[in-house]
Each structure stands twice: as C-alpha cells, then as structure tokens.
Length: 335
Image (cartoon, rainbow, N blue to C red; front, top):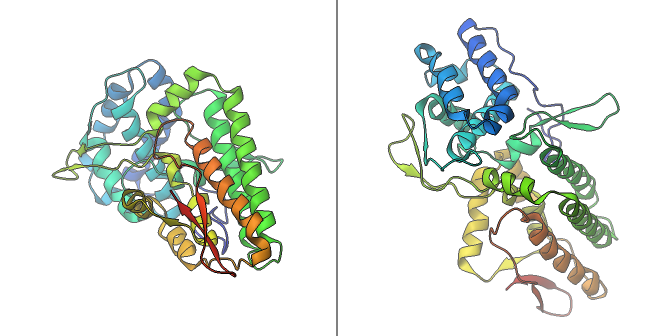
C-alpha cells in the first residue's frame, strides 16, 4: 500500500474483499469475507463464538502461520488483518455476553501473522478499523465496509474520522503557512463540533454497544500463537493520528510519566509509515503575537480529546495551562 506524503489515508482505495489465486487461500478468503458479512447478525443473535470457530475450524488442515503470507498483496493482507481483528474482538467481547479473555487458535494464529506482516499489535487498531475500512461511492463519498453492528451510528462515527483525516492531510500540506495556527485551530473546533453533534443524536444504548468493542483487550491469551497472556489495552480511537500530529506540531509535553508512557506506547498500534511521518514533523514556529491563537489550539485539542473518548473513560486531560519559556517560544504542558 502506498501512502500519501502528508496523509494517513492510503493513496488508493483499500481492498473491499481479499483477492487470491491459491485454492487453499481462496477458501480462507471466502470464509473470512462471509463471516464478516454476517458478523453483525451473529453478534445480535449472540452466537458469534459458535459461528466463528465452526467455520474457521473447517479450514484447520491448511490453517498455518504461512497461509496469510500466501494471500498476495499487502493491501489484501491488511484486509485479512482487519477481519481477523474484528473476529477476535467479537469473540472476546460480544455485547451482552460474559467477556472471554481468550482468543481461540482458529483466529489467533492467522491474526498474529497478519499483525506481524502489517507491523502492528494483533488487536483491532484505528489504522485497520478506520483507515483501511472504506471505499468511495460514485459520488466520491466515503462508504464504510465492515462494522460490528448494522446501525447507522457506527458507520457515521467511522465516516466522521475519515473526513477528519482528509482535512488533516490538507492541513499538513500548509505547515509553512503564516496563518497555520489559525487553520489548525479551525480544524480542531470543526472536529469538536462534529463529534458533539454525533453524540447529541446518538442513542445511549447504541453508544453502550460500541463501547464494549472499542475498549480493548486486557490480559488476553492467544491460543497457539503466544505462550503468555498479553495486555493490549489502547482503546481504538485513542490511537487516532490527530493527537500525535498535534503533539509534535504544538510541542506538547506531558508532566505525568504514566500518561507520557501511554502516549509513547500507542506507536505500536499505528502503521510503521505513520510513525515515520509523525516522527518527521517539526514544531511550528510560534511568535509572541501568536501566543493567543496557540493557546486556543492547545485548549481546543484538550476539548477534542475529551469529546473523542465519549465512548469510555480512557485517560482524560484536564485543560492544560500554557508555560512561556521566553519571549519567543511557548509550549503546552499537560497537567
């Protein structure tokens, strides 16, 4: 998959189905796609565990670590990773069922291999769930491919973030602009407004359903793939690229050591090319006359953070205070 120089969205549409030529892999691809199509129904009927294991176990004779390698293109491997991570999350945390902190080998073995090939942790990631989960309509609009539910809220949420990623790409192309901070602040205020509107029209019960899927794995055992329990606890939308981008551009520091570690650990959930792009970003120059708009950016970023995690209580910020280092430089400090 090729990535745009200043964007976290892929430069071409992700695969909306796995394309393969090997017969054994064709069976795998068909099974994964069929299960993903029926996943919302299985979850609603509370029989997702039985359906997933039954269908995947029928492929057990050819289910080895190497089968994922035979899928072909990286785009299709990303597609397989998305589906397998959706299955793992659904199996462990199906809504209305008691959580099971174990992923069966039928899911975990190919999931671990796909995660390795994609350079990310073997869980549902923002990169897979949002950035690799769309196609364009004839009118040029984003259309979400796979979801846990068949309701509108989940698709709307993903679509909002796809729109924000598009705007973020436009913003990153203007980092040298003299009015960049004004444009950055406009981006943040628009993002806050969109999420607040989405939450205002959302049904509380629908939010509760999604919260169960977005709150990530905690001390999960992956049968056949890992000999110990592994904690991957970053909530899906905490992995959003907006925050690390603004941390770099605004020169934000974290006083709390635990929070600083959590932010650093999020790199393991992102695409390696995304981490590279974030690492190459430079802090924008802030002149004394820009202090007011800079402070507004910091405050709106904190507000956006709280809006972003409307689905759970993952680490929240208090509104940050601004510390002036000297007459020409300021920085945001997270309290």
